[in-house]
Image 1 (spheres, rainbow, N blue to C red):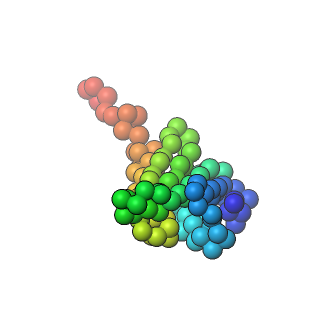
Image 2 (cartoon, rainbow, N blue to C red; image 1 turned 90 degrees about the vertical axis):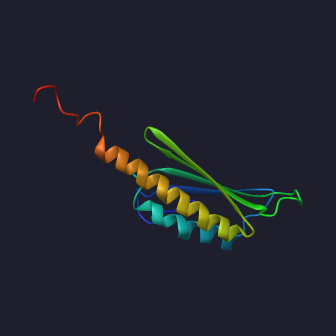
Length: 119
């Protein structure tokens, strides 16, 4: 599914592995990841993969993974929880931290701003 709120919005793909992605879960993921749309450049691809662990010894069986393809960097995050929506919430928090850090690095660019010798 792709978010098309504006013509240069981010592209969001929500996939399921060992789990059926219902329309309500897809809409929930889209609404939560819409926060990142303001911080990311236009036409950024965000892939979210939802899966369910079948091992009974693993308590937090619902897993959400995301890959954000940016210019010069690829951000990845993986979160697990008891519920798919909780995993998505944790995933969005993790991605927000990573995107903020990426933007700060791009803004400051310390290598270009170093003082020259004797000046």
